[in-house]
Length: 225
Image (tube, rainbow, N blue to C red; front, side, top):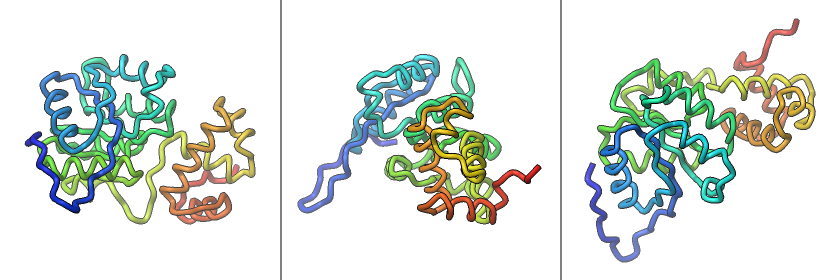
């Protein structure tokens, strides 16, 4: 990756600044990512060498954590699996957009990361411009999978939802309100709303009724007992 920032030409649209948290257990990788993303106009809020400290920061009520646009997680961390960390982050902070970054073309890991709630699975050997563009797309809510892995991860006939999203979706199908779902799953009504908004984005729907109908067509609902 070439971290050098090119001068902007007259009239060129400057991408909006994104607040990013980086998590990678290799210090040199963190330094390289910081230079590259900063050169693309992103602001690195914090960088962590382990998942424990990162999770505490993102879920501990820090003012800076409340304004994070994007979290970038390495697949293999020293203290835990990157996929496990993604699941923990998205469960506690469903408002965050998370991308997984790795050196390995691991199709199984890519599928697991998406199921855990990651909105991106990108490879470190991508060109700097491609990587930055992909991360910006993830921050906007798009699902971005490296083209070398996309065919094995994405299936157009079925939407990938996390376990928590599926649980909430099925309770919506049963007619429960956000408050009732929160009581059943020990979540706040606001967190349930965030999860449901993510489900609607993935399914391309805007109402609860349309969401349930689309989920039924895709086979995402539990069979009635």
